[in-house]
Image 1 (cartoon, rainbow over the protein chains, first blue to last red):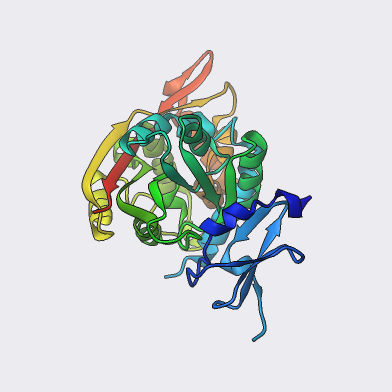
Image 2: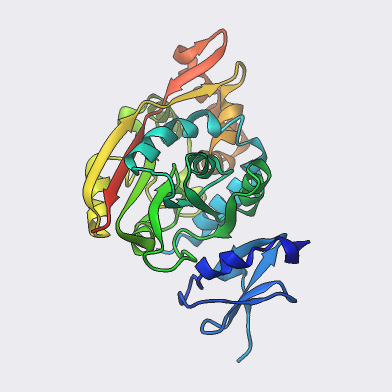
Length: 60
Length: 268
């Protein structure tokens, strides 16, 4: 359900709130990846959670 | 000062109040929306960001008038309420102090009774300026402070007499942007021009009964102060507030003036 509900078009307008760089959509993990900030923003029930303190930190 | 404790208190407080917004907070905040959208110069097709959208009323109003609206709120329960109330509205969880939108990507930013809930309102104003296109407009509202608000004059008097605010996390001044001069200065600082201010005569409507109990659902800041006091002090605050709002009680409930200030400006 969450995968279907997330609108890919929305991704074009979104940027990383920390680096303002574009994001990559990981459909399987339901995450928006900010490579520059090493952060993965979760998408829950189709809603992107664009808060830095809720994002998963990525290893280098 | 980071005000991280204050930030957490506000977020938790609004999550807890998402389900009762209509019967409490909405009873005064929504009255600012028509003037806010007027001063934002809303137009059909405009790309609008509702910064701190709560359950989505401002965003949905702008969308009904033909705007392409995105709403962001940092409380997940508010985002869920907005999605449930207004299906199809683009709402997500985000931070007004660190927006997830590109530079110059919207035509209008609107924010209704939000900035004093933030740890760093100046940063949110700067973010609004960043995401606006040149010529785009930012409009926001704030409650007028105790010197010109019947409700907040009475509440402030009671808290000053009974409450010890040092018992909770330090908070920024709730009324820092509540006068035209202060709001203009903050807008100018962020680079806005053509700054306008306007007062709206909001009236808080509360049902017959225990006004204090109603008011504890209305906002977050005052309830946090009250909850931090000893039980006996809380009782004194309850009695004092209920006594002070008597002049505005009628058979149908309370109607207490609590004006708001709307501030708008254009990005050069």
